[in-house]
Length: 136
Image 1: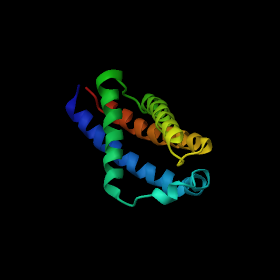
Image 2: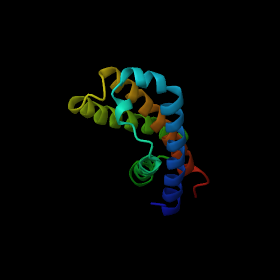
Image 3: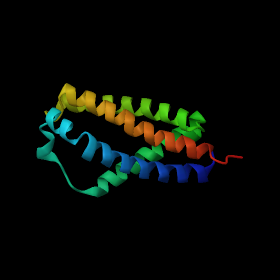
Image 4: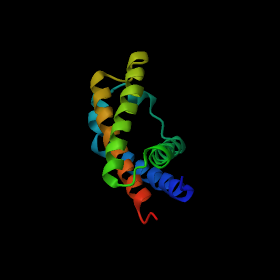
């Protein structure tokens, strides 16, 4: 494993995930999410630290999988793998939240799976590109 590629890929991935997540959740899909998950407004938190930590964990997870196990070195392969992993992670987490709380509806689960696929796909594409960039 190329440690420099992994570490920089993790950093780049975390930044992309944070920016794309802000755009998708707070701008593009904010109203639709509020309609499909009305209970969320009551439990929202404005603390940015957990968001930063979570997004950098996403970047690190994808960079580790791509670099250590999958050998992903292109934006296309990274985007496809990221979207698949993101959709499955979203479906897993959101379904369990829907089953144990009143925060999600099935519509909210479906929308969040789509958003997760887009978010993780974009993040994965950038990480995949970086891992292949000027690789010896």
